[in-house]
Image (cartoon, rainbow, N blue to C red):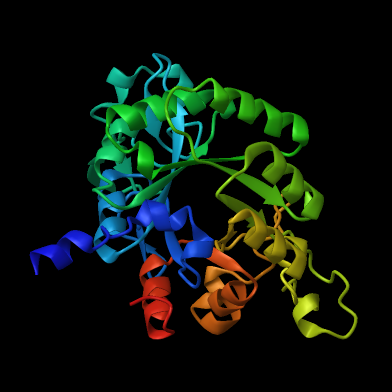
Length: 326
């Protein structure tokens, strides 16, 4: 028996499986948006907080998405907005505050203003809440120049292998700038470019792959109401019929060739709000509660193997019931 055990390969880690989709076909990763702070649409924990990150880990999420801002003294804190107004008991711009000013400021419910016990976390505190396996996806709210500092904090807290970083770039010049920054960063950086189909298309995917060689690409399906609708009622209601170019057969071919994960963001965005666009062609978490096969099943069938959601418990249960998770 001892000899047999010596021949056994060590279990492949979550991070290794995430970065090798071709070696782990059919595995679908769930990312909790700003932590698992919602329960059936109700805010039960503060977003972007340590308790929300810990809950994401407890319920079995593979990744947690968080946002980073910097205080005036250069401390990286976890917060979505550039101001404190919506999610804390204080007001003002994050960039105008010292970290010491925020240590005792409670996080609040964004609508009722009820205070939570949790405080504004530093990025280091958020990383320490990940545990040994769950990955983290840091969205760069203050720009790509923050990449080295985020990578340094990850290295100092021992989570470099669990770190992914993402940003909405837009053109080859910005891809090249990210590649340059990463090449000069002494710590590992797993960068996820965010592509918008109506802006970047397949050519943007090819360019991002050529310059950055990513393990994963977030694909935004910006599908407008009535686009190419004809008599199709789904299209008239702004629901993509085929997933668009970034989830096309050619996109899936590129992903297989590059050993690349396609990442869909199923958060609901109201496209009627001026300046807003859909992230998922109308196949969002809101519809997913009613018709999960038409949302999560649709995106998996079109090549998505990473799902970012505000409804992580429901998605995890549906994936398990549908045979995508053990």
